[in-house]
Amino acid sequence: MKVFIETYGCTFNQGDSEIMAGTLLEEGMEISDSIEDADVVIVNTCYVKLPTESKIINRIKTIQMDFPDKKLIVGGCMVEVDPKKLENAGPTCSWIGPHQLNKIGEVVKATMNGEISRVSGFSKDSKVCVPKKRQDPLIHIIPICEGCLGQCTYCCTRFARGSLYSYPIADIVEEAKSAIEDGCVEIQLTAQDTSAFGKDSGEKLSDLIKEVANLKGDFKVRVGMMHPKNIDNDLGDLIDAFKLPNVYHFIHLPIQSGSNKVLKEMKRNHTVEDYKKIVKRFREEIPDLTLATDIIVGYPTETEEDFMDTARLIEEIKFNLIHLSKYQHREGATSSNLPNIPFEDMKRRSKYLSDIKFKIIEDENKELLGKDLDVVVVEEGSKGGFIAKTNSYVPVVVHDVELGEFIKVHIDQTTSTYLRGTKI
Image (cartoon, rainbow, N blue to C red; front, side):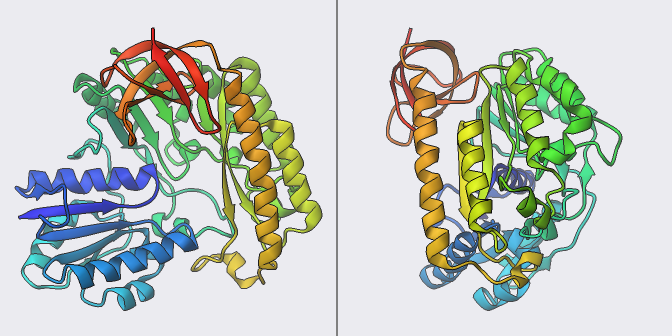
């Protein structure tokens, strides 16, 4: 039996697909590289934004229409967040929720036998030290916890992932050690909010990073998104952990708005001043830090002054990477009860921030022109060559190298999104 898995969304979701693939392989099934060659198709859904929702629903309908002979299973966040729309889009589809991945074999077998098998709901099953098939042989994804501690008013993902449940450090370290011995050069510690790790178990993210980073071997650790409100009591130790040679100098720290009023209305539970304090400490001690953030444009209560506060914050902090999203209502989210701001205002504000964003990032990258940087080659480029990552996790397009190499490159060209370099 051949199964094709199509994945949408974040690194956490990619990790879920790797678990499903590994579990199916253990049960004697084959993972197909193409939908045409498969008996069963699994669509692992993301549901964080409205455009993604529309894309997912269209994809589910298209697969049923174009491949009527294929059995279809829908997984991911849509299963828990919006079962009504899923029922409408795929009334004969089987489902599997993100907490039930260890039952994927049962769902696939039942579906192949003509049944509509639907397994959802929350569980405390671990996603560490379980079978996994990597999408990239050199990059190993480890989910360190499930769920979050947040109550963000605009978010529907928390309804899919549930409350926080952290996995033991010992198990995570054991899996990382095995992956490094297997030749992986990048370990990605991922979660809905990595900074929430251990708040339920008494362990600490900083201790986890240190234990993984101090394993033997040539590799780098990338730490996933951290919510600012969960960092304060671990800030000093976290900075020490990020200073370790095997850890990328990269943090993903969403601010969402530069207005304290809007942050309060979003129930983010941190202020702009809290955020600046964290960034200041990190940048003082790790000068080459890459700082990524997320910003929501046009939250329903965002006034023009609130928006300008965000614009001023971007220009002040000079983020190295910014994910901009136009606000849109999401299923079950509290803010969906509020009236949207006029679309033209949202469009104008988004364009204004995009212009600032690209100018800042372009200028930041230009400072790297002509420099010699240490990199690790992690994947093949989509348009030829290879993608390497600097110690600050900046992508560099290089040629005449081998996957997994730790090398030094000379930066010949910069853009607003990546660098080009030559192996020295």
